[in-house]
Length: 171
Image (cartoon, rainbow, N blue to C red; front, top):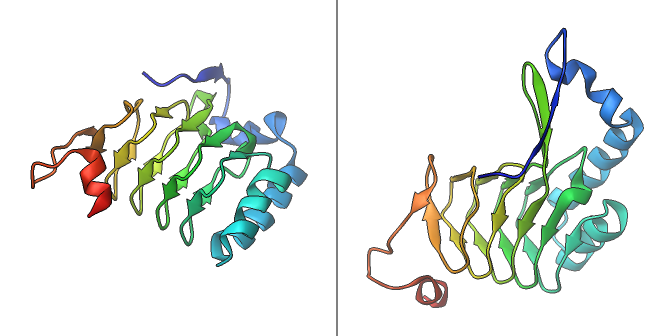
C-alpha cells in the first residue's frame, strides 16, 4: 500500500490549484535544472544538481540514465540509496493531481537497486535494497528488498533462467 497524504479539493480538478501547494517559481526553477540533469552525460554533475539544487537524497555511485525525470514540484521527497541505477527515461513522481484530490508521498529507493528503462514510480512507494524493477513497469506499491518485479500491474517475476535477482545483475 502506498503511503500518500490525500488533500481533497472542491470545484475544478486539483491541478487547477497547484500553485496553492507549490510556488510557480519553484516549478520553473526545478524544471530548468531537471532538464539540464536529464541530458547531462556527467553522472557526478547530475547527482550534484539532484542533491544541492533540487534537495533530493542521492547516495554515492548512484547513476541516473539519460532522460530520467524526477518530480518537478517535490523532488525533495525522493531518496535514492547508494550504487543504484535509475534507467533511461524513468519517471519518479512524488505527487499526483486527480479530479477531486491531490496526493503527496515520499519515494524511497534503496541501495543497489536496478530500475529498468521507461519505468514509472508513483508517489508513496518504497523499493527495498537489491530489488530489480523490469523495464516499462509501473511501480504502484512497495517492492520488497531483493525481489524481481515488473509489469503493469506490478507483480513478482521469475527470471527465465531460474536465477535469483543477484545473479541477474551479474550477467
